Image (tube, rainbow, N blue to C red; front, side, top):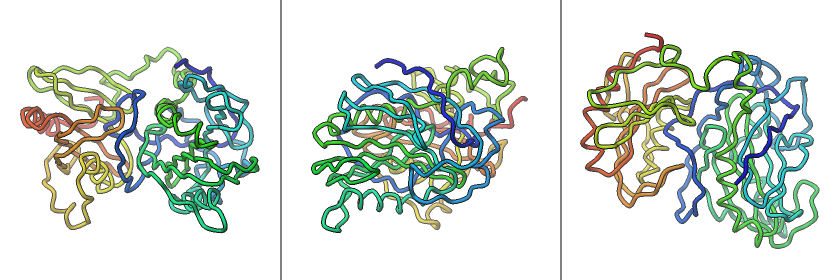
Length: 376
């Protein structure tokens, strides 16, 4: 893959939201298993500047479920960077398409990113609209796959739909495939979409996932407010601080993480921040190891730990692991802690072989106990 140049766009202003939990860099890989995405986590724009915190999207007004609705307001979206998959090419962005790509050298196959203020019509309403676009004889096309994909720091719901495509003014495609991801929040909604002949789209699905995971703010924007600032904030400037157990060291921040900590035996613990309700995040984690979602009563019964940031919820599950940006494992234990912080959460999480996670459990609990506001 080659890195695409920064694409500057003019559309709507975005809010800064916290970092997403427990996601690393996403390698190109073949997706061989399917998981049902129960919900979408909050979107994130890592490093967004204060000028993006206000503007038309700040009001949270709902928009019709239409990615290409005309822009309103005079705010401007930040420039994005992304890793351009091999064989794809960038086209001039227009309307609400803040990124517009031609897929695999086929003019009839496209992938694009759009962002709307407010709810964007809602998750299920958009999926139903896409099914209608792909349907025939008045019948909606079925969803053949529903899973998750990293998108701008959040976990988006991704659907795959086969059928007769008649949407968005494009010529009819009788044997088409649509791969569409949606990441809603109360402030704005992100859409990433690929559509074209099924024979072209199907082998490009791994590339589409990698493209979604690679989308990020442009480097020049991240440095805009403090041109001399380092790429990652020093520990004294973090919103959260912690102490390292004996023998542990910090590897530094990674995409969508505050830090990665590694113990003497090489087991990693990630620390991150993100929005979403604690129960929704707990259920997302449990889904990664094939566990059923918790109802409110079951969630309330989870163990609690104490930290310098307040009470923390302990989440644990063992099963076949299928996570974003990490190698699948036939059997793994996920041990994670969620510390609610108003509209955000702090996450401390480890995923590895059951015996390896059991060995670092005391260290993880020690780290949680040491959590405190940053700058101390």
